[in-house]
Length: 335
Image 1 (spheres, rainbow, N blue to C red):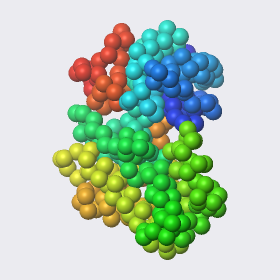
Image 2 (image 1 turned 90 degrees about the vertical axis):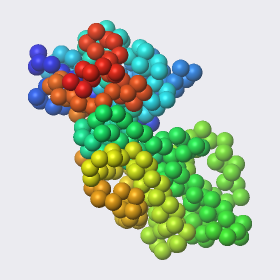
Image 3 (image 1 turned 120 degrees about the vertical axis):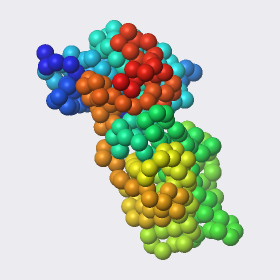
């Protein structure tokens, strides 16, 4: 045996990413699946999650030494609103099947936060297909947006893509606010504009399809298109609004940025710098130190070394005691 070990999991739209490590030695083995966890009437499906995770975890434990798993951290997209069944079933299942004594079930926004800035006060903007901001003063968590492409996710990839396609359709109709460049790009990407509703509306993956047009908006903005540039300025403003809503009131805030949308580069980051300077004067902006899986690993390492300091939350960061009880409201969550 290599001593106390941990299991760290990131569950997202592309499947599971899993790490097994040991106290004092860090990550020792890692693997991933290519299948996202199914969502059903009970939300995220714990049976499907365990079908994928348990064989991977056992194989990784053998590869790593083996290790004796004491802690498991699961960060999952949808945990906050769709994680009730996971919270009800995973702690007992991981204890029974893997011998895990303490389990943390976290929204992927929380693991993204820890991966970006570590366990310290601040705010993080997680910008991908959707957009959510999360912040903490280490006493509680605050969340802004992340409400999906119909109700929010303002400034995220789907929002930018939808705004770009709207501008394309305006140009197609001859209405004000349209962009001929965006129209040409949309037709190159999707085909004739008049047929776009029929190709888009029936899709079950509409957010991803919309977000696939966001890089085209960035390209048009870089090429001098004022409509595309205006869309990115508006997106940056929405991001900064969300960060300001969750940033701790005391001290000079640290604002971390994470997510695939940031790969658009200066055409988006420039307006975002300006928006953050206006809404959060004195904020220190940092690019993420790591991703959500790195955040899950950091939380797991802190659990095994007794240095876990993050506040619990009934939906965002749910922590079990060694006996399996929910202790998110108890003092020892931050011990």
